[in-house]
Image (cartoon, rainbow, N blue to C red; front, side, top):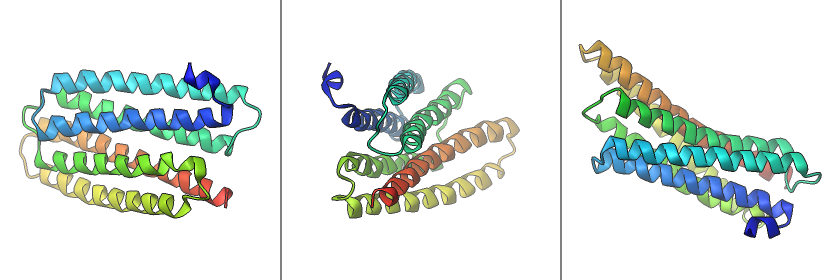
Length: 208
């Protein structure tokens, strides 16, 4: 109802924030899974539900994009932003699915470090996205948040390399394959956050 009353240019920012809120919920669920030893089935179902919600919001936003003649920012940037946010949800759903359905009984310590980075990256991204409505006024804040996301992505790369290297110290080939897939998905999830940050930075340049 509320979104229907919004001018279309503001409705896009509303969609960005809705997707961001979904991704924050996903990061909280995943952090609870690996930190508090929450039952994987509970987290898997919750994240799957959130991922489907992200798909729905993304479709609504893209449908609006097709119907809108004048947009507040470049059309391609809107598309890249919502798809980047949606891709994050997809990658986290894939990672959690593998943790549960691959019968992984013990969570490796590196997973917690990944979960913290994913959550912190989303917290930084949330502030950047909420500031986009007044991008000129909030330019420094947005740049600072994007810079922090780049730093967190570098940290995730380091964790990924160490985590995969540690896997090959094991003689359990099947477990190596399972965990390698999980870590790859988590690394891609962080990469999707950075891609959104890159899009936001390009928006700042175009609207300088």
